Length: 421
Image 1 (cartoon, rainbow, N blue to C red):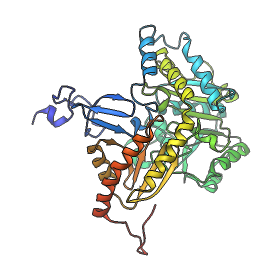
Image 2: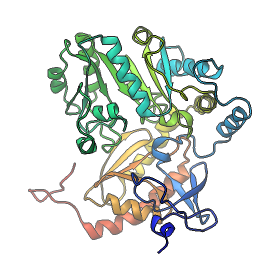
Image 3: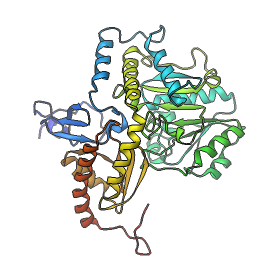
Image 4: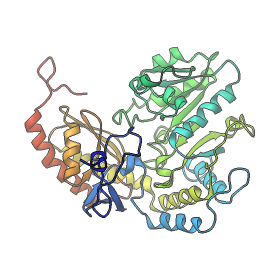
């Protein structure tokens, strides 16, 4: 076998792709995609796939959206980068739009934005801002078990998935974790003499689309206000329409101090953002934080176009409607115990641990989804997905899950009933 064949992957011409120059921190891909349009991806052989993952909730307007593509092409021909030593005209406009969407879409919330290149970098900004705001001695950030905040060292330290930390110990100090949804544990952990902020996801996406109780975020807001610490909400996967509101925290009517976002913001262009209330953002002074590429005109033009289409299409309403249709279809599938999530961020919790085989068979059948847990299938299609595409995806899964259910059966607990979640 040639090194190229061993490395896997195929080129657009059908020749084997040599992946040996890439670091091996990703599993070898089962398929190589070369083109996308709307909710459809095409592999090296021209075979179509219905995309219900959106590059991990990134391409929320679908692939190669013409408005975003034209904006990027036009900006690339005009001015792509000048660094943050100088200004550009696009970034301030995007920041004002984000501030308005944080406020619900009509009036600005009165905050300020720092632009980065990814969700991890947006969270790095939030973590540094919390320490700068709180001052010496108060540097601890409390987050939750099973959370995911990024792969950079500080964001990884905030992440509550300890198996991801093990190879890189020791972690930076100043991070504590408590069980998700447990306001009593958070109450005990938030010592105002040492804690600067609480960092929380409104839905645990990478843990399998886990929902907290309806009063959890509100209780966190009250606790943080009482203790004088920041409430920082990680909306990197949930933000910008996916859950049926512009941001998931808006379902509960709370006001965070800091909100981080990325993924959907550029519809595929790498861009992240950290928003903070103006009085919190004022803790940063020139030189405290920066990014060579953050806020550059090319990325900002993609973000501006993406947000423009999102508002024109009213994607929160579309996500709520399409999400209800998808949820209804998933709940009827064989082998599905229950469905959780909001809008178009949904998880089908299976009656046994066959999510991995289901994903593999779905891919062979032309459907892209993923399995964040052995018993969970995650769905994050384009916010512009059609009912017809939803019906196609559900039909494909129905055949697959029926066969796997027959092969695996129901998981049984000590009482002989379904094991559940």
